[in-house]
Image (cartoon, rainbow, N blue to C red):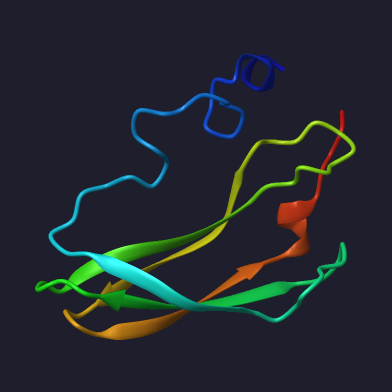
Length: 114
């Protein structure tokens, strides 16, 4: 596969990107805390639920795109280096905290070897 062999997309690229995936500018800053999952060890068919608190520590109301990625370093077949598996855009008022819930379903961890 051209994309996998050449490291063309972010999923297969092994270098240091000039602008990492998800990089963006904002008029405020956010912190993440209290990451909680519903499992400690995930089996192949488990749905993994995550929650994280997102706090706008800046002076302006703003949106944040909360993203969760997975890697599968022990896969028995070639897989992407990283995969975006869920995200949610939230509006967080200045000095406020929101809890964001994300889900990783089994199909995001599925590997198909052709």
